[in-house]
Length: 396
Image 1 (cartoon, helix red, strand yellow):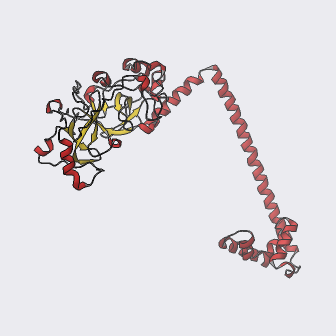
Image 2: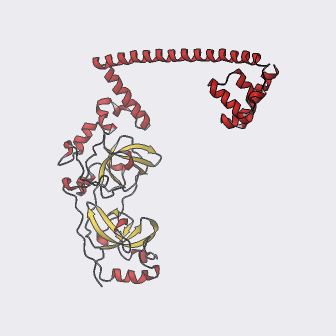
Image 3: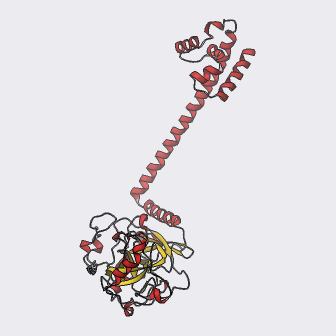
């Protein structure tokens, strides 16, 4: 049997070589964060505070990562958490492991902390009366799983029990507040840990918003999630913390707008409105902007005058239509003695309308419901209603 080839541990130490899966190109690190990202400087610039370490379900002292690429262990299938499978360590960074379920492919790799309760040494499942299962999407026939398992474990390097760590307890309650800073796993690119902000609270859930990136990467998670870390976690573990993105972050201007004084549980929309109000108020104090505001008011007055003139023209048009209605009634009275047979058929009617270019009093009296539906595109209901009123005019 061929032994698995140990894969080189994944390292992300050189920021210039980092590739963001968001764009497929090397990331453009903002100039102020080139070389080394400093949380102390960043918190001072943004006027924000870091969430205390006691709010997280993480060890106060990060656990030591003694795993090696190629080691075997037992892990829960992330796509079917009721199954325990055999996994191989294919990469590591800081206190995290990149795992691949044996019998699966590299498209379903996932990351776990070395003190996660979802990973255990080989033999733990059997000791607790369980049975190892093939991963979801097992590439071979299910009946071949026992033989595949035997071949996979034969001669493989098992991760020793001593390098596994006990999972830390969860905090008693959700103590996070909106605006607090933390470090979080980007779930769309789980090999990245990025600076993030608590964007909102929803019961036991926290909205993780990534600084400098659009909201497409934000997500809700439980307050005791293992995917969020206190500020400075990556520095302690030796993992690589990605710098903030290049997009504008609302909280960055908080130090200049007083956003830090907004109550912690304020809704996101109210925060935006607060910023807009403060910025608008500051701008109006500037002479140039004040003159622009005056010009804007003048333009508004001109627009109101234009709207008033349009309303006046509309009223005159309505009065003109009313006068035309009275002329139609007079034409109807004058045309009573004329023969209706001369233009009763459709062809005569259309010729009459085409010559006059409008439906006058005489043509109105010749309208029938079928003509309205055929030539004017009216539906049956409106056509019958018009016919009723025309008949009333004829009887008058």
